[in-house]
Length: 284
Ligand SMILES: Cc1cc2nc3c(=O)[nH]c(=O)nc-3n(C[C@H](O)[C@H](O)[C@H](O)COP(=O)(O)OP(=O)(O)OC[C@H]3O[C@@H](n4cnc5c(N)ncnc54)[C@H](O)[C@@H]3O)c2cc1C
Image (tube, rainbow, N blue to C red):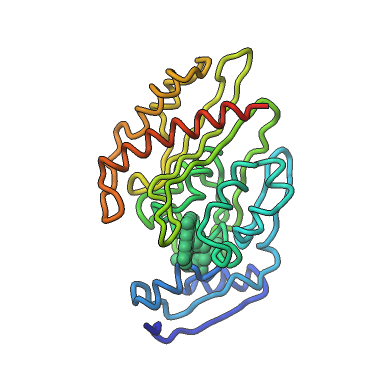
């Protein structure tokens, strides 16, 4: 189908874009989710502000022990960046799982998190990484944790007129292992279930474990019951299995034509065990 008519602006500065957004326009990034929604008439914005020409939004920087990633960095930029691969391999690994080459060349990290598809890949990794998002409006700037950002299906902490300006992830030192495991929906590549793990050990005991889950429910979340079950443990196969069995505790699982709620819960525990095992093996 053809979208309804709309006005299109392509500002070169962030201030100009934020001014237009404050008047009610909608941001356009890679268009990989928004344009299909407009063609299906699920969205009919009157005015689109293309963020793609704002140079100040496309960067990946190592700053004070954290990586700062501008909103319009594409999935390919993240997947192929030597900085991300070297300092935050979980994020690069997750980006490589998104859609196909065309989608990764166009889609952006800011667009993906703002869209908040409950089956999107990045949110699982960003939960496990305890990422922060810088949200910018015409007259405001605030930083929100991943845990507080993803509220519900297609619903985030973004206020009208605000954009995701930047994603901040930690640079973990030696002794950290990470992994992303995904069961994909073969037609789109979206996650039926996706599990991201970040873990650290000291003196043979797990001192940190963060598990981000996508695809299972209405929003990406941290599997805190599984995390608590592993803290202080050695991470034996039996301990990993016991923790993975708790992955869906307290969660209402999605059910659709691709997977029933029971099947999703089963996949989540099997793939949580795989991701935990791989992450523990990767601890250097
Ligand atoms: C065939 C296909 C397969 C896909 N497979 C996967 C997959 O396997 N895994 C996966 O995770 N994703 C998948 N996607 C989605 C893809 O990752 C998109 O890139 C992403 O969802 C949206 O990013 P975008 O830059 O294209 O945003 P757009 O489509 O331009 O925008 C999406 C929404 O976010 C808003 N927005 C955009 N940028 C910002 C910003 N900086 N601040 C605030 N709001 C903003 C827009 O107004 C819009 O509401 C797939 C898409 C397609 C078409």
